[in-house]
Length: 516
Image 1 (tube, rainbow, N blue to C red):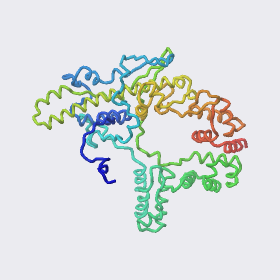
Image 2: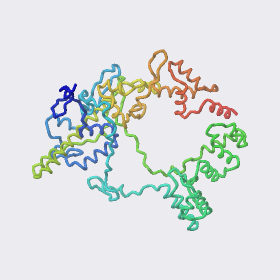
Image 3: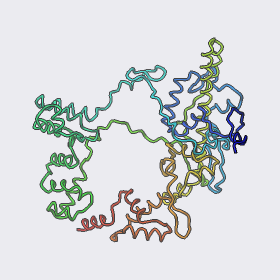
Image 4: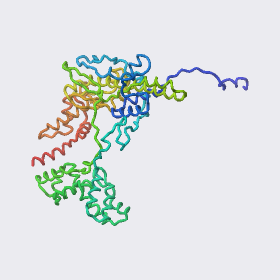
């Protein structure tokens, strides 16, 4: 039983094995191309500006003395020459498969490095935050040392600056004014006091009466309603300024929940007025400003700049153009590289310069690939949503990323990155590319599915034209199903609420009040 067979089995010891496996390697260049795809035009400009400051081999445009082109073979030089070959395509709607390029660029080889079957392995862990760039604040010098007069222009005064200015000339005693300034510090940008008055009094070591006087001083400042602790107080301050804060109005402000629910019958009883007076009172309240401090918000609103333009052609097709104003035109200065590479003696200096050259080449190629990819995805979106561009929102068809990705032979993750933070200017307005991918609602009897936006538009039209017969959500479901849209009641309610439309009960109450 204890023979030599006990040594048979697993053996321990060093040995050589040959194994074959596949893995995805995220090179820095591939990561850069992916980042550029999902950047908006503003973030892309900031990124390129930072690279121009960091890399001495990058030029925004070529000089007259030396051509600024990427070193290498002719193919590399052509790839580094910008995005002129990928700026325009013409789309013929008669045949969905016909993509005719006005520029003659090769649209089949678009972003090969970006779309190398990345699949789900590409996650969002490589988020990019552009470094702040620009001229030094306050020195009056812009890019290239140019004198910039706009650096000396004073900004618009904010809400807190305006309130401090008014408190300085209010004529109150120093203690009250000091407490009032502390109250101003706790007022948010909408004009509301976001701190408890008792806590502020305790922090400053003053009586509550002093804090109340200071708050009353703030309430006397412009804009009227600033410093209120809630919506009712904000509206009351404005009504007092108009000499309209009578007992009926006080009762109305005490029952704002009834006004929000549009329960006008209960609101009329609470205020003790008839229907005509209640209608006038509600109109007065709605004319007030619930956010009095918002007029002083000085944060500039950045207008939407489209990345793609869509123009109708005389033959019924569409022309898709990239917005070249949003495309950074960056080239590699080969002449500068050749002028200084021979004068570098240290190996570290040569390594650094060669790294700059490689990064500059990859940036130029990545920008070119990004432009071509955006144009290709936008062209397919226009082809898929041709009916919307021709006939309006009711003809917006359901669409998903996979459909577009399969049509243009790209991966779904690449299409998702392209459609993020990009906008398209069409004859029907400017839309984010994500807008053209609405959810699908199935059709009755196996017909074509309907997009959620189109169904939402139909619901709005039904409610707008309902007349004296108010449609309930169940009745809207029946009407839509008669039109071939298979929709549930809860979906109708969700879409109606997203449109800001009241329920059928609230609409009936409003009609009874209006009818008198």
